[in-house]
Image (cartoon, rainbow, N blue to C red; front, side, top):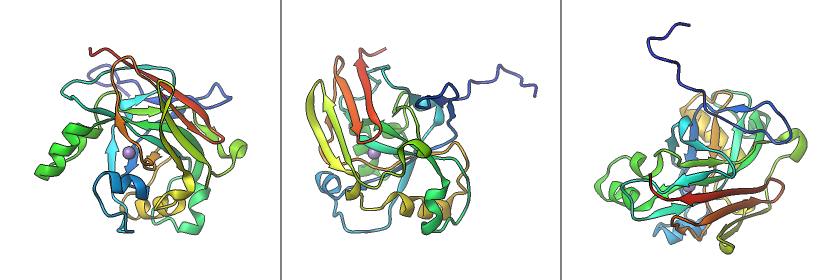
Length: 231
Ligand code: MN
């Protein structure tokens, strides 16, 4: 294919134990998927239908990277999340077949400009400026299901320069991974390469340049990120 400008790089992330990489297509994110986090955001954690937002594929940042403190915010926050890697696409995927579409899992950190997100909420504007900025999707190596199995319970934590800030269990998701895949695929055809960030447990908070953030999920190891000086 000829293009009139140089073709942009295809975003990708590492795969645990392999040289071959994971090509990132879209990044879907589930809002408020742990009851205690919904409460800390001032919302009723009743089981209203899940809602989604997206990040661009090239917002991906890999493990052990330094993310510059982003512009136009005074309140960058961390959100530890389980990431689901879709290996087989589909639409209207039934819940009882949903896990067949999962190739693997990763640790993630949904970096958020909370002040810009709050303005968007208050004014009924899109969340993109709070959620979908450069470097906002920190994704660790993808671990193949064939090696780690499906993760339905287990600890998820985030430490900030060694202090535990978030501690939850994957079993506490309001909407499980099969439910999220089933519901998402009713609105969008899922395609191989899509990633789904499945929401964060309670304890989100601000981070500053110099912080070392570490997300840990049972079976998936740790995902470390350093917050750097602004560009
Ligand atoms: Mn999130």
